[in-house]
Image 1 (cartoon, rainbow over the protein chains, first blue to last red):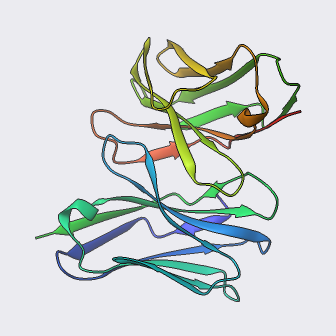
Image 2 (cartoon, rainbow over the protein chains, first blue to last red):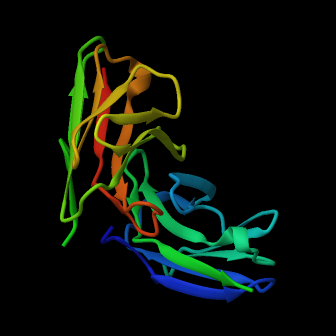
Length: 111
Length: 113
C-alpha cells in the first residue's frame, strides 16, 4: 500500500533480536497491525496496537508506536528459524474497516 | 509486471441479497489465490484459498463460497447476505510452490444493511 511503507528485507542471526520498521501517513489511523505470512500460508495476525498506546508487549514481541513520526516497529526477541516469514504492517483509520498494508518485510533467520 | 484487480471498491447490499466479488491477477501464472475478510476492529481472517483452477479450500464455515473458474480469476459469492457479512474483503495472491511474496488487492468494503 502506498500509505504504508516498510523495508523489504531483513536478515538476522538466530538468537538475536529482529526489528522491523514501518511508517504510515494516515494521521487518523486507529489500529496498527503486524501480520505474519509463512511460506505457502495465509496471513496471521501477530499483534495490534491502538493509536493511543505507545507500546505493547506480548511474549517475544514488542510493538513500539511513535505517533508524532508515524512510525511503528516490531521487535522479535531471541529470533528463531520459525520466525522466518514475511511481516506486514497494516493500518486502519478511525471508524472504517479498510486496511492499508505495507509491501511486507521478508525476514530471513540464519543459523 | 504483476498486478491484482479487485472490484468493486465499495458495496452496500441489503440483507438477503446475493454477492459477487471478483479478483483477477495479471502478469503471473498458477498463483495461489486468497480471500480475506476483516471485520471492524479485528484482524484479517482467511476465508478461502486456492492453489489451482477449481481447487478451493475453506478455512471457516460461513455464508460465503468461492470459485476459481480460470487460473487468474477468483470469485467470492454469497446467495443471501447476512448483516454479519459486513466487512472489508481482501483478495491476495502469491507464487507457487512457496509463497515468498504476497500481493494484495485494494479491497472491497461491504456494508450489509
